[in-house]
Each structure stands twice: as C-alpha cells, then as structure tokens.
Amino acid sequence: MPQDKSLKLGVVDERLAVAIKDALGVKIERSSQVQELARTIRLHFPVYLKQLAGDSFEAEDVRTAQRGLAHSYSRSKVKFNINKADTMIIQSICLLDQLDKDVNTFAMRVREWYSWHFPELIKIVPDNIMFTRCAKLIGARSNLNEEMLPALEEIIGDEQKARDVFQAAKMSMGTDISEVDLVSIESFAERVISLAEYRAELQKYLHSRMGEVAPNLSALVGDVLGARLISRAGSLTSLSKYPASTVQILGAEKALFRALKSRGKTPKYGLIFNSSFISRAKLKDKGRISRYLANKCSIASRLDNFSDVTTSAFGEAMKQQVEDRLKFYETGQAPAKNADVMHAALASLGDLQFDDAGEEERDAKPKASSSKKSAAMDVDEEEEEEEKSSKKKKEKKDKKDKKDKKDKKDKKKRD
Image (tube, rainbow, N blue to C red; front, side, top):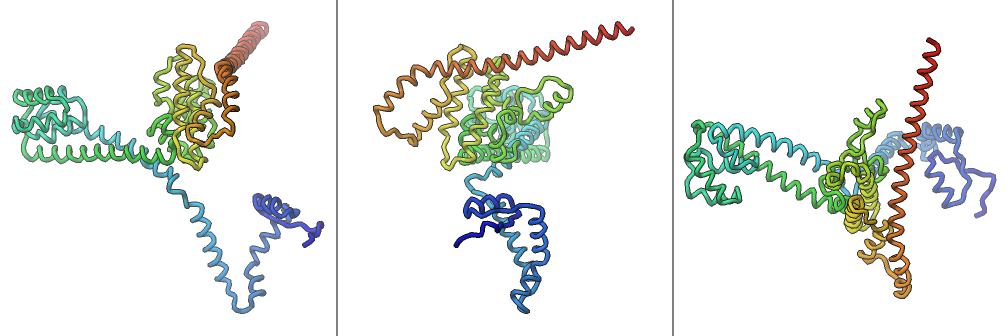
C-alpha cells in the first residue's frame, strides 16, 4: 500500500520509534506535542473505549487490564536465567565471609572455655577447629585412655601429637570441671563443628556456582575473589560494564575519595589485592601488575556475561598471561601477544577452523618471527605510557614550585 509522505507517526518512546523506523521506514515524530497527545489519550482512554464498546464496557475492566499488564511486565523483568544466577553467588560469598568471622569467634570461645580444664592442649593443637574437635572427643581429661588414641589420631592426623595429648592429659595443671559445665562446653563445641562443616559445604557450592556462572573469572582469580568482585559490583552484568580502572580499585572507594579530597596518592588496588599475583610481585611492580590483572578481570567478566557457551579456556589462558607478565617483570622475557593467546584459546575449543592447511602454515612463519617483536612492542608501549604520565606529574610539580617561588618573591617585594 503506498504511503502518504506528508503523514508522520507520533511515538513517545525513543527505542520504539527507532525500531518502527528501521522496520517499516515510516516517518517518526517525537516532540512535546506528541507527548501531550499521548497523555491526553491515556487520561480519557476509558471514555474512548466506552464509545466504541457501548454499554457493555466498564471502567474497572481497563484498570484490571492495566494491572495485569504491569504484573506481566514486572515478572518478565525479574525473571532470570537459572544458569546465570549471580544472585546466589552474592548471597553465598556474603554468608561465607560471615561464617568465617563467626566460626573463628566461636572457636576462640571454646579454646578459652576448655583451657581452664586442659590448658596444655592449645600448645599441641593450635588449629581452632581441630582443637574444638579434640575438646568434644576428650571431654573430661580423666576420661582419656588408650582406646581413644585412634580417634584422636584421626582428628589430629599425627600419631606422635596424639601421644603427646595423652601424656599431657595425665600431667595437666588445669582445674577440675563439673559435669554440668562439661555438657555446656561439649554442646557448644558440637555447634561450632557443625558450622565449620557447613562452611566447607558452602565453599563447594560456591565453587560449582562460579564454574557455571563465571568460569573465566573463577579460573583467573579464584572462586572467592571472583565472587567478591561480583558481590561488590552488585551483579555480573554490572561488573562486566565496569572499565578496568574501576575493577582495579573496586573495594577501595573510601581511600580513593579521601585521596582525591586531600590531593594525595590514589590507591593502586582494592579487592584484587587479595590475589596471589599481587602478593608475588615486587613492591615496585605491584601497581603495574594490579592494572594488568584488572584488565584481564574485566575481559573475563564480559566473556562470562555475554557469551552463550560456558567455558573456562579463556580464563586459564589469561591466567597464564598474568604469570608471563610477572615473569617479564622479573627476568625481562617478553610475554606472548594477546591476540595469539586468544587465538590459541579459540583453537583449543575447536571453534576456529582453517579452510586450507597450507595457508595456515604460511601464516604461521611470519607470526612466529614477529611474536617476540610484537610482545616487546606491547611492553614498550606500556612503559612509554608510564613515562608520559610520570613526565606530566613532574611538569605539574615544576610549575607548582615555580609558582610558589614567584609568590614568595612577590610577597617579599610587597613587604
């Protein structure tokens, strides 16, 4: 049907206007007049329907339809993919951190409580959970006998330490304890042990969820740190939208704003400081490796969030890249180029296919010869950027010093 070019379609929503224009090629009008017309139509919509439908129409029907539409829209927004349920990861890591604090606090309480009766046990068994298990097994130290040694050895994991506990129980300097107090200690110790066991199960659950939701991020920085980054960002989608600079200082917002306010040094890292890569780097390289690691975390989160295939191949490849970068800072050996690493990761998945084997061999020769050169270029570019930033800082400092000297001279002249 031929369209009248003088006619225009008024649309309030911008996205809907773009979609209609792309699909139908109709001229779209978006202005304050269109918005006012749409508002008037919505206001008097029941009147228009009553004129069309007659006496059978009731205004309550419109309100019911609007309410049903609102509920359907809300359900569609809340609905999520069960395989990408990052909400479960956020709740799990929050509970895991809380359990760490609580289990340690409760285990220390057991140690203080039971040490009145058997103080020598702390020196032999320093681990909190192991001490709690021993306290529950032994109970009153006078009850410890040769028959309990195998069970004690199973808890401690060392036959000699089990013997030392047995000998220490005979010559203990602790006070005697009543049966009522002992029951309370054993009951509390049992609860602490159950919490520790549940924490271990929660750790396994978090590992499985991270493997399904964010396998690349988990392979790169580990389950706990990856889950903390997602929790701090609010969701995996939010984390994937953050630039690498934001990921780098995620968790150090207070220090950042304090530094900006006082014009001091900004923090180099936030949550990613807990990564083993940062602790293994030298003091002068910690800022550089944290920037590089944040870059890889940003890439890994985007791969996890937007890819349809669940795989950890890219995360493992990027982890090796960070290892190579650490090696470069120590030995000067140029790491592989990022494009070559991603190419190899794709090839390992079988998604990359070559039509001609001869063409692949021809392309491999120049790549092999230029890989070191390109990697060295990447490193040189990074060093050049650092030099430029340091030069800018130095220039700003020199200008400030000159200005201060000039102000002092002017002040002296005025005086």
